[in-house]
Image (tube, rainbow, N blue to C red; front, side, top):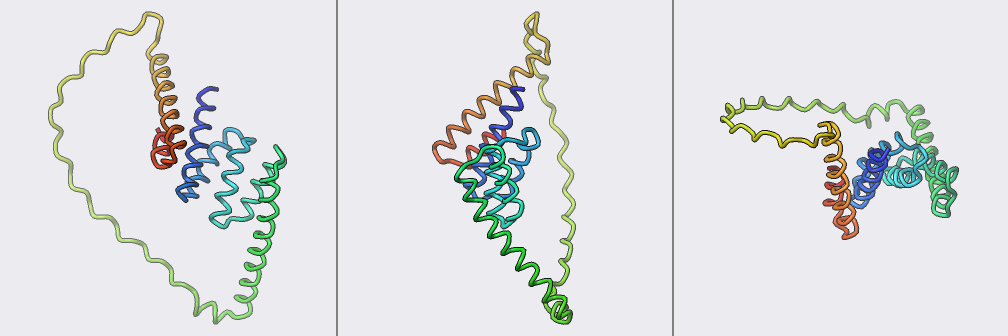
Length: 187
């Protein structure tokens, strides 16, 4: 549907902004939402792969890049697979060495083990909000067109608002104002 396509574009663009702002976990979340709707979206797979690499989740990044190559081979994805394969093997090797060292010397593990983190204290109770002031009655709604139902009018207004927010986001992205672009795409 049109809404799904618009949502995918906004989420993909917001993920690009998050990567520029080094908010990789946010980029991963947005790309994952796109991929839930469209598992073959190569932009989302590439972005999520690079974001996974940035947070040192090399195995997940490699899986995304391999999926990109399966859908649409590219030099960039191939180079990323080579690089990520090397990183994933190194990380697995280090994990295995750490596990072997811990198994060989349980006393050292006990000495170097970090204490369990303490739970933060509960937040202080919030004060009760003041009683609401009397608000003037809203004006009566304008008469709707004879053939338009309220649901159709609301959906059309929402679609126009979403398209306008996407245009603002794209303009901000082109200017390099990633924070403003991300906010517009969030709308």
